[in-house]
Length: 196
Image (cartoon, rainbow, N blue to C red; front, side):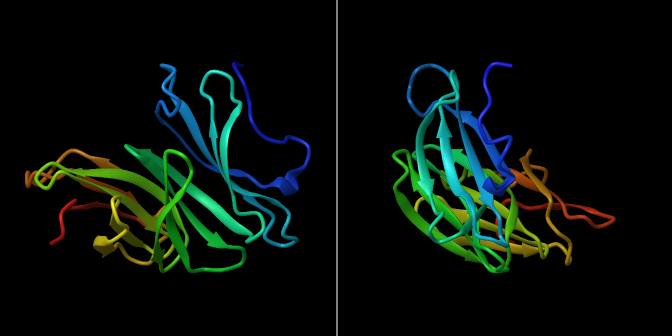
C-alpha cells in the first residue's frame, strides 16, 4: 500500500462515497485525489466533506467542510478550473450539484430532483464547452454547464436508480460524446450528449 486516508475505527465518520483521480491540482507532476465523505444521517456525526488529497502522500491539501450543515456528499469529479460534487442534506431527497474552483471556493449550485450518485464530464467539441453529467436515484440525468451552473439538457431513463454513467464515444456522430447509463433496471440506455 502506498497510502490510505480515512478513519477505520470510527464508522460514524461516514463512508467515502466518491473519488476522482484525473488532475494534478498542485502541479507537482503527480495526479491528486478528490474524495467525498459522508456522515451519519441518523445522529449527525461525520465529515460531510470534500477533500483534495496529495496523490504522492495522501496528505490533505484542502477540505470543503459541510459538517455544520450536515450535507451528505456523494459523487465527485474534477475538471479544468475546479470540480463538482453531488450533495444533499441528511434525510432529504432533493439534492444539488455543487461546483468549486481549484482553491475550494464555491462557484455555483444546480438543484436536482433527487440525490445523484453517478457523475462524469462531457465535452461539446462543436460549442467548446464542458458539462457535468449527473444521474439521480429517480432515473433523471442532467447536463450542467461547468462555467455557470445552467442546465443544458435533462433526460429521464425510467424510474430506476442511476448507479453508473459514462461519457463515451459519439455514437450518433453529431460532434458531442454520448452518455451510457445503467439505472438498476433491466435495460442500459445510451443518451445523446446533445439536447434533442
